Length: 236
Image (tube, rainbow, N blue to C red; front, side, top):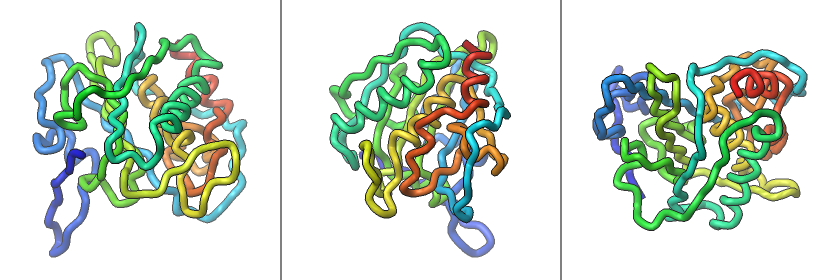
C-alpha cells in the first residue's frame, strides 16, 4: 500500500492539505507532465449536513472541459481492499453502466493489477482504481480522483481513483451496515468526473450523482439525476 505523507504545519497545528495546495506536490504527484497537459483533482467527501429529501429532478450541471475517448482500460489494485475483488468489480461495472445508459460514452474494461502501483497518482500511462489512506487530503475525503488532461485536445489521457482504505465500505442490494459508505454511489460520482462532469455543490442538487458529498448508508446516488443525464448527453 502506498502511504501518503504530506502534512502542513499551520497556525500552530497540523492539518491535511486541500487539493489546490498539493496540485504540484512531488511527494503526492511524483511525475512531471507534458507541456500541454494539466492535472485536475476531484474529491468525494462525507456528507455532514442534516438529513433531507434530495429531489432528482434538479437540472443543474457543470463540465470540466474534457472528454474520454476510445476504449478505457483500468487496473484494479486489490491490496488493502475493504471489499472483495468481485464486489468491487461489480460496483465498478454498475457505476459505469449508470452513465452509459444515458450517453454514448466509451467502453470500460478492467483487470486485476499484475504489479503494485509505483505511486497512486503517478503519470505512468496506467488508469488505476485502488484503496489507499488519503492523509494528504482532509479527513472527510472518501475518494480522490486524479485526471490528466490534454488541454489542447480537451481529452482525458489518464485517470486514477483512490478509495479511502480507512473508512467502512459496503455494497449490494440490501440495506448497508451502519456507518458504511456505498462504494457504487461513490464510484458513480468518480466516473462522472472521469467523463468530464464537474461537482454540483448546491444543496438543492443533493440528489445529483455529481453532488460531491455522500452520507453513510445512502444508496440513492447510484441513480443519475435529471441534470446528470442532461450533462452526459451534452458531452457525448
